[in-house]
Amino acid sequence: MTRYIFVTGGVLSSLGKGITSASIATILKQSGLNVSMLKIDPYLNVDPGTMSPLEHGEVFVTADGAETDLDIGHYERFIDATLGAKNNFTTGQVYQSVLRRERKGGYLGQTIQVIPHIVDEIKDRIKKAGKEHDFLIVELGGTVGDIEGLPFMEAIRELKHELDDDNTMNIHVTLIPYLAAAGELKTKPAQHGVQELRRIGITPHMLVCRTERPLPKDLKRKLAMFCDVNANAVIEASDAASIYQVPLNFIKEGILSPLSNHFNIKIKPNMQKWETLVKHIVLPQDELTIAFVGKYLDLKESYKSLTEALVHAGANLNTKINITWCDSERIEVLGAYEVIGACDAVLVAGGFGNRGIEGKLKAIQYARENEIVYLGICLGMQLAVIEYARNVLGLEDSNSIEFNENTTNPLIYLIDEFIDQSGDTQLRTHKSPMGGTMRLGEYPFIPKEGTKIKKAYGNNETYFERHRHRYEMNPFYKTDLENAGMIISGASSYGLIETVELKDHPWFVGVQFHPEFTSHLESPNPIILEFIKAASNNR
Ligand code: GLN
Image (cartoon, rainbow, N blue to C red; front, side, top):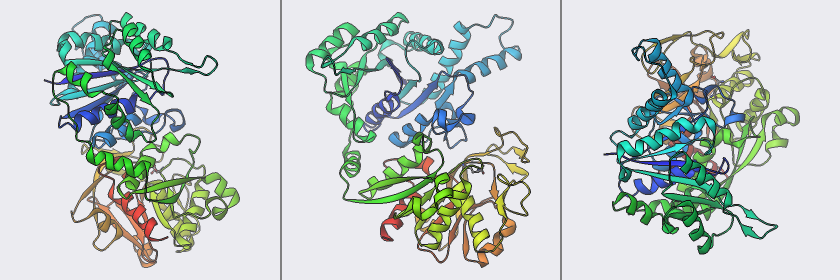
């Protein structure tokens, strides 16, 4: 029997509901329980794949090729698990399924309504995600009181009856603001949020209180009384130095007893390894600096998985990774040295579109010529190949057809036939629509003996990493590039080029996939770990 924990939020957004949910899941997982997670997004987009990273942060790609909310990334990183398409759904997906069924005559002439049809579809999806797990933690996006959240709230209310009180728990994340003028912490907004929740028929069993200041005992008692929760189930969540500290803080705050009491099971996490890693993040022995070259620098959330992957590598090497954010458009104007300056390594992340490309190319040339450790991810690999072709092979108009359709040297091109994960053939041209023509999700690749990639990944023959791109490296140039010193160090089983590196350079690697999507705190991604080791050895 699966037990369900529903996490809702009140007062305002950005309270850290995702981290709260992932932290509770971590505690259960480290107690030996089989835990999974689900994020429900009440917006109408079918998935965040076509949303601007500036608006919505990163699009997280799962192993099975779903483009999901960035919280799914946090979940995987915390519970060291691989989630998939069924672990994130939106209002858009719910309506799409119901309407498709309606068109096929699946409702036998009934009038289709929010209650029961939409709510039933939501409940089915929740139960599907919970199947075969001891616990499913369900995070509901948005804030209590949002109109678009109502069908989901109703589903949570109904599930309590279907699954029994003992098997479901409601946790409400709220804010206790500090009013400087009054010199007081205020509980009224939290009380109003809970009232709204109870009006819909959901009574929280636990409050997680985000606060900048410690909550006095009396205030906790008052909150418990007026929000109708047990006094030991008011958990303080003050700001933490690292998000990975949050599970440890929750345990210190006494979260284990209300959880154990509610579900009537023993919850005793072993946090030893976790604690050591957190100590390395908060009090590291060493530090180094990475120049992170990108274009969405106004919203660092769009590189969330990558910045977290650097934290994981750092935690496992007891090293703090300082990031110098380098805007590729500034590099175009000022030059690489002026913007990047001294650093231990250069990282060019993935991206789409023309903006800032020439600046990224300059950064790559700077790293290559000055023997600075370099990692290029996806677009960062494609540009490393273009830079090499332009400046070493002398093919001056080398480009990706993403940026110049008519280039005479399309180093990065579009293969017109592509077999996707499900074995279907996709036909593509540069006019194909953006959505639906990307190589998405996990694909195998085989590293070549004696390469840096092989060293990073160890002894297995085949590895899996996740992709999110339309363009590929053009094999037509393979021999010329190899003769000039570029090693094609990894290929997919269909012959697509997945990784490149340089012969005469301390550590210069480009990967067509996104290694950051498989990095977890307890199991950092091998290539990112190797990158940090190289940066540290090359100082
Ligand atoms: N724009 C490039 C492509 O679509 C790279 C994508 C990426 O970096 N994720 O192939």
